[in-house]
Image 1 (tube, rainbow, N blue to C red):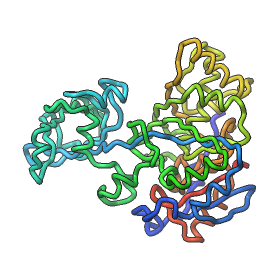
Image 2 (tube, rainbow, N blue to C red):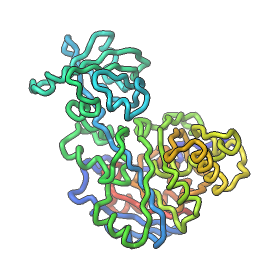
Image 3 (cartoon, helix red, strand yellow):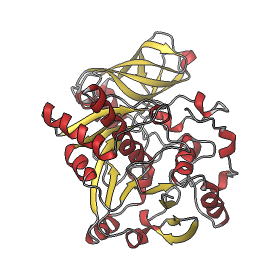
Image 4 (cartoon, one colour):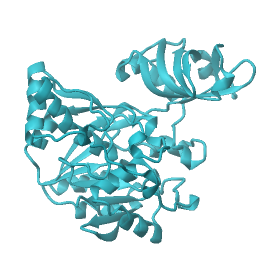
Length: 402
């Protein structure tokens, strides 16, 4: 049964001055809240390795943020901002990034009403020679309100990934209420980011330094990665009172067979870095169920965990995925998820969660509440009363599942 949850029950008072507008000078100098069995303690993030048990499996999301925000101008002088969300033609991310003359993307279009059908030229107020030689243009193929499909063309045979690096800016969250700056190019990206495709950072990972990662490894903790590309839906508020009426957007992810085998071996503790890692890992069970029942994995729908009872163990589901990959000769499994994690969710894989402090009335607050069996206010009240910084560039927490 789909839970009946009212989003206003997950509100709290977040003043603008509590939102971290910029990162701290040192990534691992942020505060760290530790929650375990209803008790809260306070540390500095660089102490995280001391709080993790030996023999744990720690999983990071190695997606990489692309500078996906582009500024164009019409011949009339009107400015149009185009925010690339996901590729349409070619549909696969890597292929689209490798395109050398044209590609179409689903985009959010700022000032959309002023753009009808004319060709847009890249805004270049400083008349940079490299931008002139690039010759980047945008044509509107289809529009639906503030979103649409935009075809980009350019001249110099650079891959589209290079075009974005030259012409785009980092799409920092709108709640920062400022334009992207040079500092964001480095700091709105994890140190271990590897696979291009996200339009928002998996921000729990922004605190990790090489020193912290090294001390985690020295403690005998096994570090592995998944890749879930974070979409713009991460910024979308829950607008309806009933959470059941909020649509989750599909986000593509991939995991290795090696990781599935490691999870199947039932490590003593699975630590997920970020809510994106949680959503990826917990989606694996339902993909495994699809293998058991249909012979192949399928995308995980938003309410799949709540609409029926599942008779299979986690080990059976993971084994089904591994058998499918063996049969198909796959080393990596690609899929998509719309899963929403709300109170009542049956966690099957993740035991501990490293995460930042999230917006009021957001799906991420619901996930935290589900993880700590409804005790999210204990965590957030402490953070508010003890000077913690909030949201993407804010402080961190280590939550242990109740």
